Length: 405
Image (cartoon, rainbow, N blue to C red):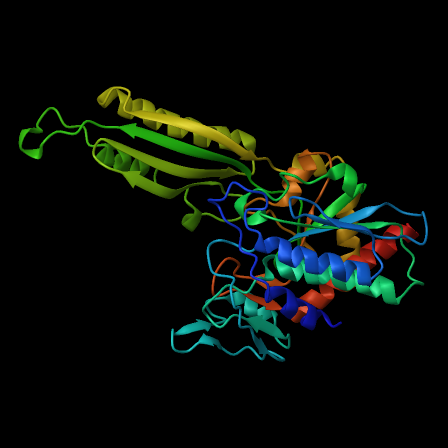
């Protein structure tokens, strides 16, 4: 099966995960794609294929030599809750020539290379977009399509030498629970790669350290006609708290290695309010400074309104670089394979987190590879089929080099 047909089939499954759900997986519909993938794996003669009770699909491409490492490749089946993944209607632009791409003329949705400059690097590529009503699902069904295309290649080319290759497809990555039930012992790889990035020439082995900060503000409500000297407006304190953090450390004003505070939820009334922030920094010492600034801001406001502001910090994940640097060869072989294929290897810090970060700290070192997808989590999402094909070549080359080294 061509990777294009495979990808189009996978995105026809609605696999949106849910932040509100407490089940694993968070939505049963993720299991439907998992069952389909498990059957496809059996057709391609993978061994030990199973979907566990949490929806995670495991399988082994059996090796024909015991040389080299046992490598793993992982992608996630769910799509983001940020936009619908139901009834995806993809549009294919063949041999893209650099023009403005119309996603949905009625809604005036366009992909303009001046606004999305990465398109300038995709001239002559075949590109898939949405129709402007759903996300596309390249995050991460492009990764699944790449991995399954590798499996099919090995099935059709028994002369291709490789040790056991472990593959897994997870649920609920988009809601931060992708590795919650991942069985590293069952997976049984020396190390792995998540295939869940963007530009195929980029790879990642460092990501943000991440905390969530929940700011609880207590006010006192009085009738407005008799409020002087009595009312403590929690909403006013909330507004002041956020403004005192400044404008310089926010997602919309930062890039690269720069960290931020991100206020993503705010609700309440005069008597009480809650602000919820994401705190992100690659350097943990800088993370501590973000937290110290928040705490000192709360302390200052508490000198004006005693005990009005309390902050709860919740650890989310850590920078996988601290683990990956101990096994540098698993990053080096990405770079070598890319150069062998005439690609332009660019190690890039992730301004977010991955399943790979969680797995690295659980004992499975796990850098991240690109998929050729862009503008994730929304109706402007698109993907390069040409880069997906290159992703298949890259993984095969990495496996080949691992055997020959």
